[in-house]
Length: 136
Image 1 (tube, one colour):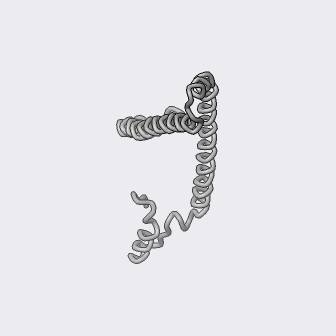
Image 2 (image 1 turned 90 degrees about the vertical axis):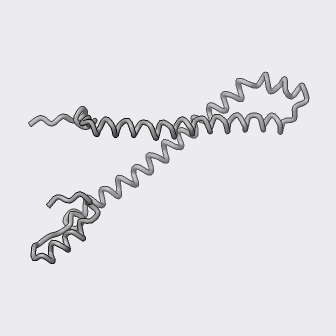
Image 3 (image 1 turned 30 degrees about the vertical axis):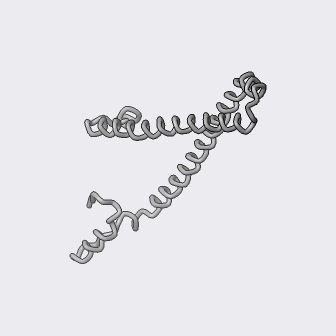
């Protein structure tokens, strides 16, 4: 029997048993699928963490390059009497604005792109068809 709500398999199996039929839910007959899903979920979180770490190194490198590129301007500001704490505040503000711009762009892309892909999928386009064609 095929069901729409896969998480309701045990409830539907129990109702089917009450009608006199022999039934088992897919989670009962295939526990290895649940274990595989749990492992894949953990692997995904590890990969997400590594991606975040790599992105963090990228942001730190960009900020470091920005400071190195502005060394002359920092020297001029210090010669004009700007305190090191004010210079630090300027660069912290710049880094916050850079982070905010990245967050806004990332969130916008994260909202728009899946919506576009969902529209394409609803129109019959499926990326798996292009990547893994079935050939009997």
